[in-house]
Image: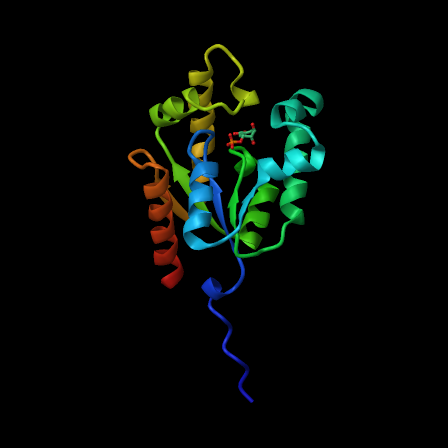
Length: 183
Ligand code: S3P
């Protein structure tokens, strides 16, 4: 007897995972995308703060960046693939081991933005970024972006954020996902 046809990937539970630099809009666009699609919104930084009972800045201060990355990987491993929107910390792409977890969890979407766009958004953001607590943080940001860009480009989908507001960006992301998932 012939077995049932396997369900296409788009019908299986899987996350839409937003990756990209600090200031790219992963959290704000992620929330708007969650509203638009009716999916729950998850955020790795938020989950880590709840798990460790400290802000991201405090986690960096008390435990250091390596320990923060360990916790990040551990958290990713603990997640199950569900129909959620998952926003991640900008450095999630740095650890090789995280990529197999991201692939297990779902579709990765790189929210790509130019340095000037990121700088403008970070200037008006209230969120503290421990990696940017230096005088020439703009150059630090540019250096980090240069280093990480090839990693971000490993995403399944790339969506440019420069000319978008939060709602139009969420729509652009949803359209890009639908296009890829209907192929
Ligand atoms: C980091 C980005 C932050 C946070 C931590 C490290 C990074 O998240 O995870 O400060 O390495 O880029 P956002 O990208 O949401 O700012």
